[in-house]
Image (cartoon, rainbow, N blue to C red; front, side):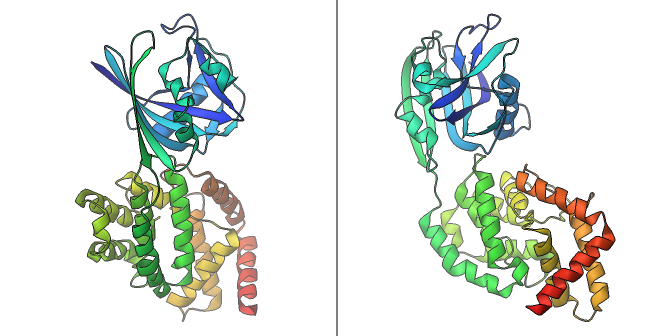
Length: 368
C-alpha cells in the first residue's frame, strides 16, 4: 500500500472556512478540499502548511496551531495528515489553473456531496476539538474511492503541562534564579517560557519537555556565563526528582536542548526542542532594555574598567549580537524577533547616535 505524508490547514473565521476545489484536470475534479499538500524532505509540517496554503489559495497565513493527526486509508493507499488551524491571514482566495479557492460557510460546505474526507473534521464532535486550544486529536478514517466513510475512530490528547511537573519547577527551580544577575533572572525565564510555549503551538512536540528546557536553560549562568549552557544541562541531569516525568530518551533530548540554546553556539540545535527554546531566548523587549542588560553585565563582571570603555563595550557587544552579521539568530521563524532585530540594525548603523543613546540609558539608571 502506498503511503504519503501531508498537511491540511483549516483557516476558520466567523463560521466560514477557506476551501479549494479541484478543476477538470484533477482525478478528484469538482471535489472540495482543505488546503494543504505533501511534506517535502527536511521540511517541518508547519512550513509545509504555510507554503501549500500560499500555492493553493494565494493567501499568506501565520500563527498556526498544531492540532494533531489524521490517518486516511483508501483501498490501495494511505495518507498521514498533520493538522493545523489558524485565523491569521493576509490576502483573499485566488483562482488557479488546477484549482480554485474560496471562503465558504461551514454548513454549506458540509451539505456538498463532493467533498473529500478531511472535511469531516468540520462536523461535530470533531470541530469542537479542532477549534479549542486544550486538546489535540488523532483521527483514523477508512474510506472507499467515492469518499464514503466506512469507519472512523477519534482519540483526544490533553495538551496541557502536567500540573505536578509545573508545581515542582515553580517551587523548587524558579527560586534558584535568584543567584543569577537580573538579565538572566526569573523575569527573563518567564519570558522565554511563554515565548517557547507560543512557538511550540505550531509544532508536534511534547509541551512538558518544552517547558522544562526553558525552565532550566539558564540555571548555571551564575557559575560561569561563558559555559552556562553546559552547566545548566549538568544541573538538570543531576536533578533526580525531575526525571520521573520523562523517559530516558526524553531526558537526553532535554539535556541536549539546554546545551544547544545559546545564541553564540557554533552548531545548530540537535532537536526541535533546542530550536524552539533557542529561538524563544532571542528576546528583544526594546533597544533600551537590551542596553541596560548589557551595561549591568559589564558592571558586574568588569567593575574595574572605566565608564567610557564600558560604554564602548556595550556598543560592540550589541553590534556583534544584533548587527547585520550578528550571531543572534533564530532557527525557527519568529516575527517578533525579526521586526525587533531590523530596528536594532537601523539604530546600530549610526554609532555616534547609538553611543549617545547608551549614555542616556545609563544616566537614567544612575538617577533611579
